[in-house]
View 1 (cartoon, rainbow, N blue to C red):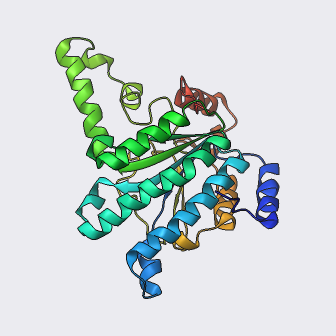
View 2 (view 1 turned 90 degrees about the vertical axis):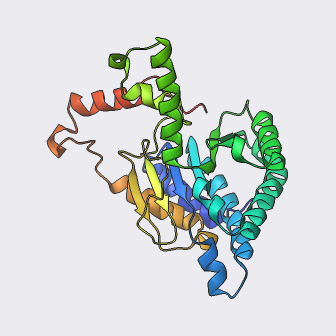
Amino acid sequence: MATKLSSADIKLIEDVKAKGNIPQHIAIIMDGNGRWAKNRSLPRAAGHQRGVESVRRIVEACAVLGVKILTLYTFSTENWNRPKDEVSTLMRLIVKSLKNETDELNKNNIRLANIGDASSLPDIVRNELEAAVKKTSANDKMILNLALSYSGRWELVEAVKVISGKLVSGKIKPEDITEETISNHLSTEGMIDPDLLIRSGGDFRISNFLLWQIAYSEIFISDVLWPDFKCKHLIDAVKDFQKRERRFGLVSEQLSSKHIKEHNDKSHSNKVAKA
């Protein structure tokens, strides 16, 4: 993947980095591929193909920005209900992208991970994904999470199943279950929760994405359709994040007190970016 960032993009990134307070985990709902294609009287597949270009740009921009985890909502469990032709096209595009981009991810010290239901993927997709995950497993600059065949409700159901099994077997007792117990049984186990959730395409919906993890994430909605989403739009979201007052349920007067430190210590306890 050749660089997608211009000198102007790099300048934007350096300027925003200088202000500090860069979100360590950014999650993105990449919406608008279909509308982008429809607006141009093109097949939906054209929108998805163009959307891959945006993925390349944003992955590179986040790595340069110093983001430790980037989670992309790539394909939801509900997306399996789309027309078969579109699903097949998406699966082929995912395989092609993995083949084309894994070496570049590896070269740039980016580790690939999947936080979705890999067992539901076609063999060719699952095999390519597993190979890419294995090849990049030692990288530690940034984690690129693909939420592939993922939904927040699916993830919570799976966590409940495992925890219930431990209850039945006597490995844990009901009173042992805490928020940390739930977090440790999610696909994002060991990772800090998203600081910033971005949604392209203008819709104000969470769409079943990271329902547990985004409890205190800052949310930024962009009207820009995903295929047109560029570095400057990412920087707009980060600048907005830098202006937010993150209270975590407290009041402003408490933010400089030990309460906010205790919250942050608890939220990040035993959680690392794995990068």
